[in-house]
Image (tube, rainbow, N blue to C red; front, top):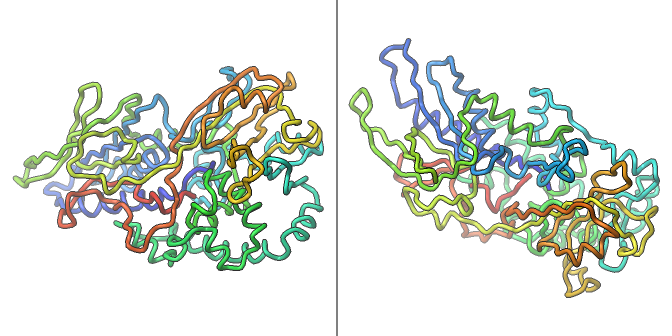
Length: 480
């Protein structure tokens, strides 16, 4: 799975709306006395920590308008899905990403952040170097009975692809570049967006969102074999969802990984810890917000000012000028908000990650250890007839590390929790197994033409001048 870049839309919106709708209303009577405004950020993941960082950049602490941010995070760590665990619980063996493992080169924010923060990026991992030295295949596309396609890392990969798929890959690549280039224009925008529909319209993405990826690829004349074996491999690897369920934009974004992926050597979570640290935000870990309520106060000039009371499970409450909800409403655990939000909730796709240290059994795939691919992606609909019960038991099976004792560290993504009985079929032996379930992505289903997106500003009515800023408004749009 990849780290998200779409929070740039919400962050840009958060900064511009907080600046324009709240702070610029005030006039300094004494220019030597700065205006200080407080912002509560609910969620310490990618969106929450980066929002705090960019607010601190727009409103520096020595400026005439200053912002103090407080990040509320229910977990004991920052980074959201970008978190790592020690292999076998032993840091001396290294760490492995539990969720978001990579980010694409097109993600300008994260690429720049690693440079500014002095974080070492890695592209060719030590695993890839070792695999290359051993001449083991890299990618293998598995249909439950055999590998329909695999890459060895040699010149012959291109020849095999040309023989199997013809010129279709070049045709798709041309269209994919065109679509993603439009998205990249968002990095140069100088204003925020209150509604995702405005973004969709400006990028001319309506048709991509209104139909399935499967239907769109057929309309483009893309070879079905290429769609089912290669393009669907990308969507299953990135979103754990198939072409017949995803909207067309999702497959275009998934294939961006083919143009370069990166990771931080010490763990991707370091990016978000740096965002939070450099923002100088107050960080409250293991603190779950349960309610947000409106209050009206009178400022020093006698003006009525709307503020928010944020309550947590420990019974504490704090008052803030603004609130940024940087976690999906559906899973926020907030039982009281100033207005109904049911219509803003969107369904999410469950993803299970299983980490295993042990010795894989290549005979499960009809291979030997020498010719067993290190990254296996299962086929999805309609290529599921060779799987038991017509469904692949996992989406991806990838070797991430070789340990000195000869064991492999494997990460498996699946739509269902994997039981020990099945893992015993995949491995000769296991010395460590770690499981985690995520609601990692919204269900990126086609969006009906009359269906609305959640708004970046949650409020009781359109007539209200202010509301809670919601970074998850891009639900159903995309995650890059």
